[in-house]
Image (tube, rainbow, N blue to C red):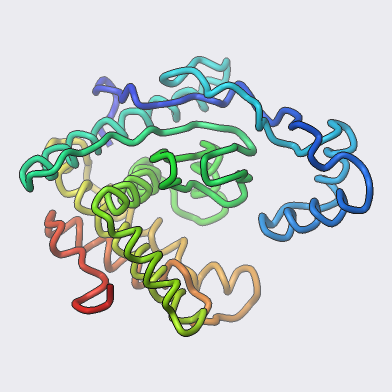
Length: 295
């Protein structure tokens, strides 16, 4: 990607310097500590023994609950590689701002800019506490995207999806969730999930939501290409990344078999297909993964 020298978004909140400080002692001592820490470890895929040791050392939850909001814009941390990734993320966010502000304006809407929060290891959002183990996420309650930049290294080493556009796709996917939130799609999906007759039916709605976000990421990529941001091979990097984090592939890696009824994001084929749809069309209307009558 030809990203260097381009505008960086001012909507970046850098909490990387905060690390994982102690909380307010919510888990201090007793059997309740063990139960809650083990539950947290199960939810996040963390090592429960390591977390228990961390709680004993800090006297509380290993999270900066009371940490300040963070410095505006990417800050220099002394880690050149990490700081370069922060600048890259701010540049990609700025380009998504240009795309979605234009699309919303053409349709008579106002695009409210999301904030990108950079953190390390764990973070507190309006949606609650999250470990970096959950990966990048969007919190509709505060309109912010959250990412531990170490995930970019995981894309390459763990998921076999290297390349800067693979990283940009991840950010653009979370921006896609912000678009869904602004358009009221997220609320309608939540309401439909509450009416669902089974967990499998609710999961299917989640899959459709994620596939639409993939497509919306592709719509951004379409216009980024028109602005000269993409280089030959970038689109393929994004498609490989989308396929690498499909539910079927992830389940095969973690449990050795596939259970489609438990999917929440879609298969590798689905995710790549919907990203490609957005990349090729550049049309938001092509991203209707729900179809008529679903919501």
